[in-house]
Image (cartoon, rainbow, N blue to C red):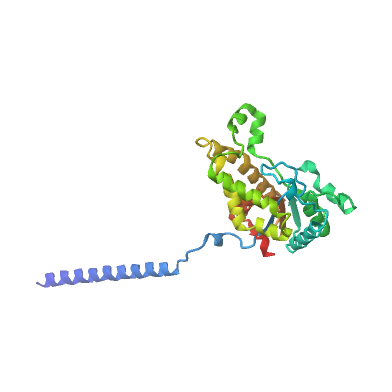
Length: 294
């Protein structure tokens, strides 16, 4: 009987120890959960980022390279009033960003910095091209000594040099003439927007063109129509042509970025701006500055 009582006491003591231990472990786990912090992804990266302002523009000199073209009656002359003063207003607005670097849609062969120096000496004042009217003019008035040419072409151009027959067959019927109804919606939108430069103030037009909604639909314009060619052919074309080109341009932006204090102004055809927006907003290195926030 004495042994039996002793055994039960030992059993009870052991059970008590186990219970207390489990309670302590449970409390420890609860405390650990309370102390744990759910960190947002952004907390793992530096808060200071390089500021980039993208100014998507139409081509002031109407070179006719884009698929969607402006009719003669809707073209403007930025060298005569009232558009001449509107360009000045636009330039003064962009200056508020106070960039220390300006990048334009040009290749190195265009010799942007050489042209900038000649502009400062009085040259190129009658050029309508937005690279002069915006890029070079801004660089001059902001007393910058370098203008960056960051344009590039896509992988498809490299591939064509190696196998032109394959690329020709791949791009067959990629001509923006699809019977997809959404292709017509986009064409109607572009045609109406092409009229606006002759009808509204340029600064207001640029705010509209560079809005998030405009960029979203501009991005989506490439995801309809010929994008649906065959099974994946349209998607493959877009990836090695348009998307590849813009990724390379973005890489060129990275190349001219020296530190987080840089304030980079990018002036490009507005068709590029939606992709730039996506890349800059997703990048942990950059802050995309909204055009209408200046």
